[in-house]
Structures are given as structure tokens and as C-alpha cells.
Amino acid sequence: MAWTWRFEKSDGTETKPAVQPEEFPTQGDAESWIGEEWRELLEGGAEQVTLFEDGKKIYGPMSLRAE
Image (cartoon, rainbow, N blue to C red; front, side):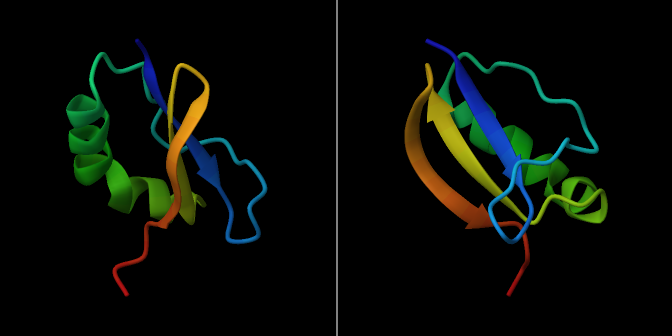
């Protein structure tokens, strides 16, 4: 299984992340990574993220803003 993030602008269009992610072996690894990198991703233009497992949407979009 591979867990991946999709990075989006606020309108839902995909954007290239400021920090290049990898494929994660577990959901926990993917979520820990986003927890560490969200500020840099937000500063780089990503407004929200969606989590996928092997191409299947798990949840999202989830805002990177701390509102």
C-alpha cells in the first residue's frame, strides 16, 4: 500500500508542493509528515491537501490554514 498527498490551491486545482513528498508506507507516516511540513507547504502555495491510499481518496480536502 502507498499513501500519497495531493496538494491543491483553495479552488481545488492541483499545485506543485514546496516540499517534495514521498510515498508513505502507512497512513500514520503520511499524517506525521504533513504535520511537520504544513507550514512550508502553505507558504509555498498549497492551501489544502487530500490523502489517497493506492489512488483511492481517503479524506480531504483538508485546509492547511490554522483557522
